[in-house]
Image (cartoon, rainbow, N blue to C red):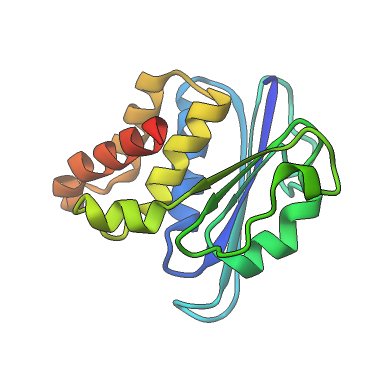
Length: 182
């Protein structure tokens, strides 16, 4: 894809902004055009959170993604809000643990959308990766779009995990790989 336009959405505290930052850093490492626009409610945790990310080879006109070719939804309200904005030929990646009503591709407003229901929260808990459902979904996003090289994704993860939390780098890497294989 010359331009990967992504909306990641869920509740505050699910790591939506971190996952968006990971994708944006991967684009920066590969010297691509990148925009990252977080949006969240006034609540610290539990409020709405979404993030528009674009990784492109051409200049980006607006940081706001109104016509994503990928939607990553971590809760039902987010899926319901953004499902009809995904362009034909795009992808919907939803955490089926937290999103009970995921439509099948045939029932969507736009044709040719591929829908992935990944039980990311459940997979994270079963694999001792609690809190890393966002990274599992980011791994699936990479597997669907290949928006960067795989090595770049790991380098971006190393850049995003702060020095004081380096012990979390290995679990995050495992979560990425789990998402890629899901």
